[in-house]
Image (cartoon, rainbow, N blue to C red; front, top):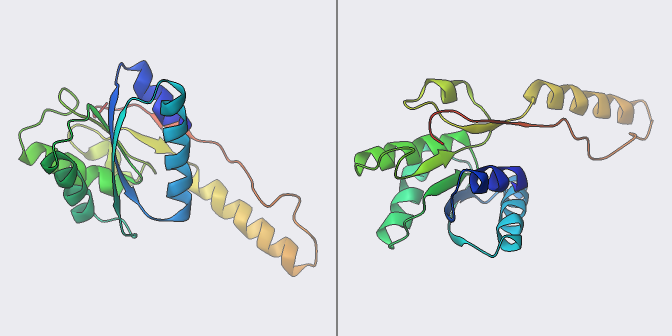
Length: 164
């Protein structure tokens, strides 16, 4: 979340919207995003929280809610690529140019993200590495060994595509 905030600020955005699922990991990313914005002087942020699991419909509804209540963010961060794709569709249906009127970034780098038009900017995490680490930790527990760490950072990458 912190890295996405810095990325969008570097692109000149000062008005933000969040369409966010209410799951624990997503909420931690949202806190990081908001912390960076607060440190920069608390730019305008409008938030819509949707129930997990994320769906394309919830992404459309989330952006619709932001816009219908008068919010006009120049950048939208969604807690998943699925929500971001829904927001992209809602933006198009309202005649908003992406990224001209509204930049959109998701999370997960799901397979479809590179195939949307424009291609969806996102945060890529190594899902295979997460799976391997989880399996190793489970096997360690089964063998009676205490895992070396409860939290393992596998890193991430911001993939800056056409929507930002």
